[in-house]
Image 1 (tube, rainbow, N blue to C red):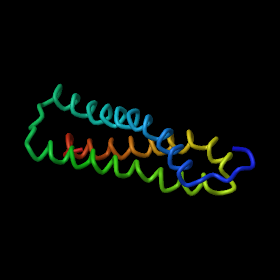
Image 2 (cartoon, rainbow, N blue to C red):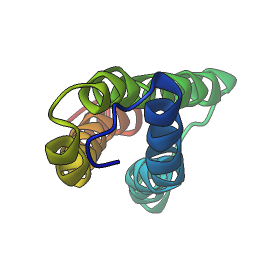
Image 3 (cartoon, rainbow, N blue to C red):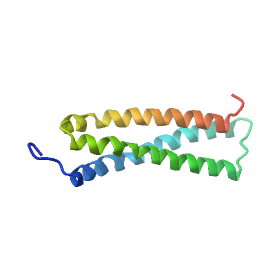
Amino acid sequence: MSGEATTFRDALTSAIRYWEPRRVIYNLVLVSVVGIHAARQWLGPGLSVTTDTFLFLFLLAVLANVAYCAAYIADIPAQLSGFRSEWLRLRLAVFLVGLAFAAILAHYFSQSLFWPDI
């Protein structure tokens, strides 16, 4: 798109094509973090799984995916700006930083859920 203005539709399409395949990776990493904590607890003294545990995990999964949508809030305006080419090169770094941040949050929430005495 050299010299052409990017339309909102083009920016939205580009954002969806970029971010949605990575949502699978994002969710797999977060499920892995939570799964490791759950497995550690099951191998230890035993885990008391209740309906509330599953509801809390479901709530956290929904909130994590809502937070993932924040990428669109940054991505679309950046693509519509004069910094589009720079932004397109930085998206992977934004994804990796966001993924690391989400994994750290998942670690602490899982630790408090599965290991409340720590």
